[in-house]
Amino acid sequence: MSDQESVPQSFRAKLLIATPNMGDPRFSFSVIYMIGHDSSGAMGIIINKAKSDILISDLLEDIGIEGDVRVADTPVLDGGPVDIDRGFVIHSSDYFEPKSSLMVSDTLAMTPTKGVLESFVKDTRPDKAVMAIGYAGWGAGQLESEIADNAWLVTEADEALIFSEDLDGKWAKALSDMGIDPSSLSQSGGRA
Image (cartoon, rainbow, N blue to C red):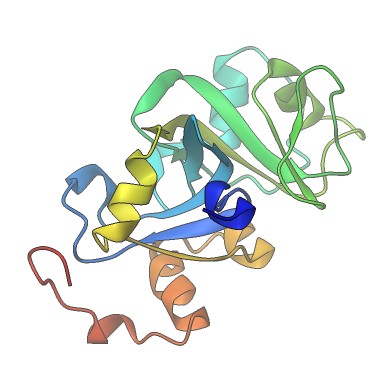
């Protein structure tokens, strides 16, 4: 085995797009921004499903942060079924907490602390941000297996898509950006 074959491909900072072969209804039509991926597992945030009708301003008010929201007051996202009581913010790298933020790409970071939420009402806020509750997680080899079973397509991340307020249109747009007509996908019931 060559060195290149022994190092698994990382999907960090990529998008996963659920195909009709996705067997888990929690992920049907999902678009996930991958925060991390290595041999021990993977983590991502669903970027196209809202957590009911809660806006960022509602959440800030609920946790006692006062002031006018200075980022786009978008719906809080349902980031996935893991850690559903915890918030995660994907944001532009102009905001960074040295002890808490994780650089995901050259221009995007993820911060899971209250400090980033407090920044939303201050001049120190990130230029762009989306807030999610929960995340999607995979154990070692699990994501690779799902990709091999054609449950996911993997593509480059588009920041405009990540921060788009058109949640309902993100799945079709992500496919379209790959050159795939969403209506051409069909359920095969298993491996293609």
